[in-house]
Image 1 (tube, one colour):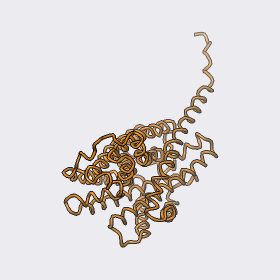
Image 2 (cartoon, one colour):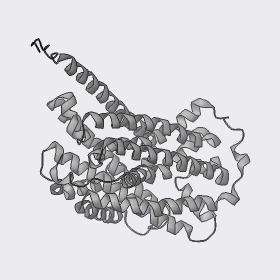
Image 3 (cartoon, helix red, strand yellow):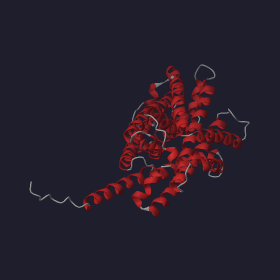
Image 4 (cartoon, rainbow, N blue to C red):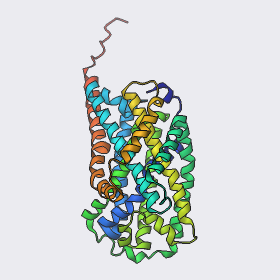
Length: 376
């Protein structure tokens, strides 16, 4: 661990806020339309199923954290796989994180422009401003990121819940009937995109050393997972019973359309303002994880040396991976679940199995203590 990054230890509340914002910022926006397309009125069940998947990967990360305390994923990869293989896999994880973060940045542009809030602002300008803001917060250190998002998430979640509650008078619960009509196969299909987004909780492995103990990180991640499962499922259900499954499945801006649909006037503007902060917090955390991960790979004294180059590269990649918004909306549901399965679920699980097997062999190889034959 880079020494200057190991000073501050965050608390359960702040880590819960960080992880909820990490997943919720994009999952809340992109889950409704993908689940409604796959399972119609039963789409909300896909988010519940995704909660089970996430609980599994949280446990895997927790066990790895217990085996390698005060070390991040990048640091214990060489200890499990050997120096060369560990470094190679570390590089692959950094590439995956660049892909993930640049995709999030492009998603932010899609929301800001698609809702009409910044329709006259060039996307490149929005992207640069957002990365400058995230870079500034990143340079202030992990403590600032942790405390800031812990506080902001209370405001974001409160207004988000308030928006959903305002829609209650417009709900038509008969829209959910017949419940279960989609069948398990389609409900499982509806869980694939939430499965990928919820798998982002595996990034606990990169920030677990900033907790006082792996157990506290485990508790924070599980609280975040349960709350996300409840909030996202309720949101998808709200979209379906107010707007209908067909309308929900046709729009990635369903949440903001709902905010326009319900009184009081102006709800959409406040909701979008909070989501600007949410995207800023998610990009800031991901940019920190990338910068800190690279510094650990290269054995640098501080991640501060590479923060600005990382930010500049993210802006470039966000306009390189996707030609336009429609291309992004087709590519992410088609490719992200498969990539997430590999990097967020399969590899951590295999790492734990290998680490446990190696630990068992090491313990078995230790010679038994010699018997004491001395006369008393």
